[in-house]
Image (cartoon, rainbow, N blue to C red; front, side, top):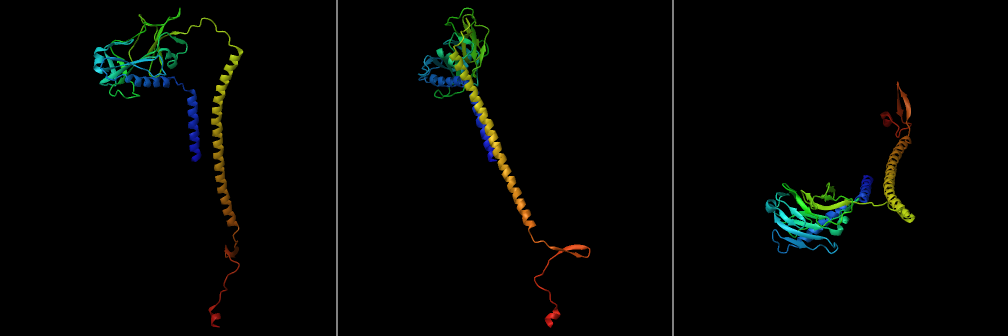
Length: 312
């Protein structure tokens, strides 16, 4: 039983290492950033007033990121909307799920750190990633709050990207949005006036496909060798992990086989001793009594005597 538990533990550890080596930290990193910025944006509410946008200060190690927060009543948001929350324009009819009496809208501008937290291979950002998230306003000192869901039921939420960077000639700008898992969704093209539209909360930006103007020159031989070394190194790590798993399984199987073999050998040896003990006992002589053969003793301890002998 102990060997089976050890085998299960080894398999669990090896599976964890394989999954850790293959997983991507992008989703976890962007989610952690949202939690951190929620904490810092709530700190701007010293004497909060409903419907006022308060600019907050991001952590010192996130230079360039801008954040702000606004506290609202859910009923007021649904009836009136928010005409201007930085680049966002929220229409009437927005539904909050799950329902809360008051909520806080958190604004994010990731600036130059946009590609770091939301990488898009094959695309280039021509605008920073802007975030609009909603949280429960019941406790303004709370951290790691779950996000609320915003859904536009009538009109769409608009994001103004009027300050776009220069778009490369021949490229077509597209709106991109990211869900809570960091999965991107692209639109066919940006709306007139450099605006994007959405019906829910999330992160948004404008991108263009990466332009490859000319074939890149062949890398030097040293770079090729370095690339081959890196690829071979990653492959060797994978094979080391796989080899460790297989070797551990073989070793445990061999140990389990030896234990079972020793147990069987001890049982067989005990049976042989019992058989030998039975065979070395004193054998009785067989005597014919009528038509039946029966064992008889060779001698007796006391010779029988008749009563007449005692009388004599």
